[in-house]
Amino acid sequence: MGRIRDSRKNNISPDVRHMLGELENYLRYERRLSEDNITCILRDIRYLAKRYYQR
Image (tube, rainbow, N blue to C red; front, side):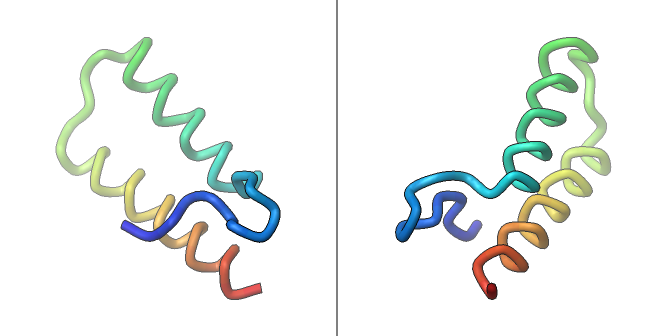
């Protein structure tokens, strides 16, 4: 998985922060994620991180 932090600003992109927050909520409150759900969330995070670092 790519870097989540931006070394120039040393912060997390808002999109990635949002996705990580959603993942945390799922893990904390749902307590049950299918492999497909986890795969989709990680794919989304990778996509958003990649898009953020291409700017």
